Length: 254
Ligand SMILES: C[S@@+](CC[C@H](N)C(=O)[O-])C[C@H]1O[C@@H](n2cnc3c(N)ncnc32)[C@H](O)[C@@H]1O
Image 1: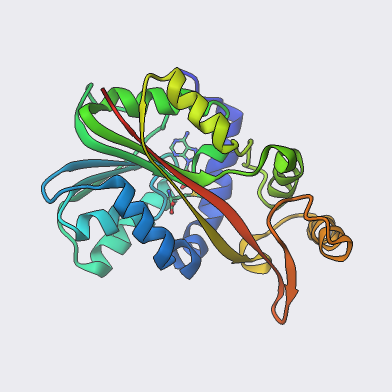
Image 2 (image 1 turned 135 degrees about the vertical axis):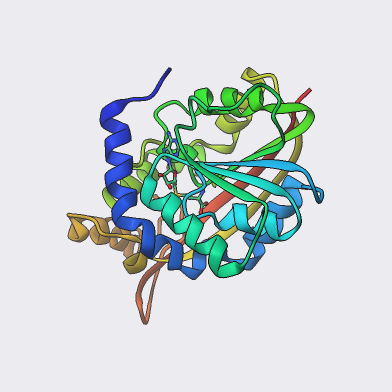
């Protein structure tokens, strides 16, 4: 068991506050990223799929709409409540939901054909522990898929500082090479690597206590033209905008 109680509490506090706004933000259901995600998961109708740290069930519901039988699990009860509301609003069958920890999944070995997690690894103190669990509950020949922001190595420290200012439950975003490394460490075999850039408006994503420090960090990048955070930030009519550099890795479980 690797859960860190103080960190788990930070997660639950942050995502209880953010459950409803997160569920409603169109950027979280953005079409290009979702199409790439569904393609990498490659679930067939009737497949059993687990969405780990499912939040408000956006990926889980998209997979169920394709005919998969999907279980969503998340640490934050308010997120599971949002997921149930989404399922009911979309009139979907074939879904069930649980409150639980990504690093101690309450499922038998090889229960699922596909195991996916999106935008969660940067919240975990030990992402490798979650990846091991994802592998354990995936059947031989199945797929384990992780989708998350992957900063470049030379921007990782600044990126993490920005994200921690924006969201105190951030731990660290792995680079693509680090993500590939924990896949190898876990004994998974790479099947697909893909990328997308997710455009975001800072004001809709931040409830930072120190918004001034966060904006100052972006402004330094924008006026200096150096892109030290690595998100290509710019000032638009509605404030600061930037692009999350997202990677998708699908591994085969041997
Ligand atoms: C940024 S949200 C992403 C939600 C969803 N996967 C999506 O892509 O829309 C991160 C989610 O991870 C969950 N989470 C963080 N740590 C977790 C853990 N150890 N176990 C399960 N869920 C966790 C949070 O409660 C939150 O719902």
